[in-house]
Image (cartoon, rainbow, N blue to C red; front, side, top):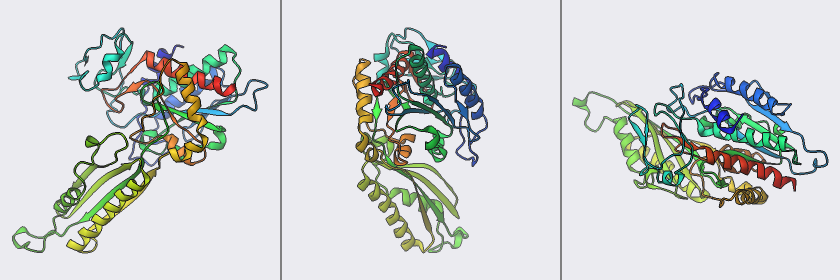
Length: 405
């Protein structure tokens, strides 16, 4: 099976996760792809491939005789797709010999424009894969799944010597819980890579420190005719809280290492209201300062309107994995060599989000993130090139070879 055939096969299987579900996995449909992958893994020679009751897939390629002492490395991707734009079926569209111009997405009324996505001009001549504009594509992260399996299949067929290779495909990454039930003992690796990034040649070992923050606001609702100095309109208090945050520190206004407060959801009426934020910053000190700002706002609101008017709940999400990657930096250096060997220049842009690798690194498994060749994830403008996927698969193979040296 070619890389393209494998990728198209996987994206057509609906696997969106559900952030409102409390089951593991959060959607039953993820089992369909999981079972398909177990079969595909066995077919290429991963004899111990299996899926557990929580939809985690594990498999191993034993070390070549004489190479048992080599570093045990692993590769990880997730099988779920974002709950956003998850109205399946997915209908991938292949654009052979892409001409570098805007791409009209079928009858959806959407266009992937070169103005919004200037990198497209550099992809002229490639085989581009997009959606039809009605759903996401699912390259996040079925491209990673396909690339890992193709790379490992090629290593097995080539007969090249290698150390022990571990493979895992996980559910529910898009809702932030896939690392919760990851079995490090079952995976059995010393170093690993998530294959879940953007452009090919990317190796990321820095990510945001992250938390969620929720303000529950309690108002006092009485007849507006007699409300003077008595009414507390919860919606207006919510607006006041948001106005106390720095106006220029939102996702739209920040880049690189700059952090932000992101208002994800607001709801309410005069009696009660809720504000839901995610808070991000690469630097630990700045991240703590952002949380302190929220705590101070809660204090000010309760002093102004009375105790209990605002209740802030902060929940930690993940931390910057650089702290754990630096002591095992050969995992990055080896990836750099593999990328250079594939004719590319390694890219180390900090990821403005999270990755399973961050959680896994703090669990004791240093795990930077490799690019897959994809762009514009989580929406109908998602796209990827076959050439980018092939390079990513090549890089995985070269990493395996380098660790065997």
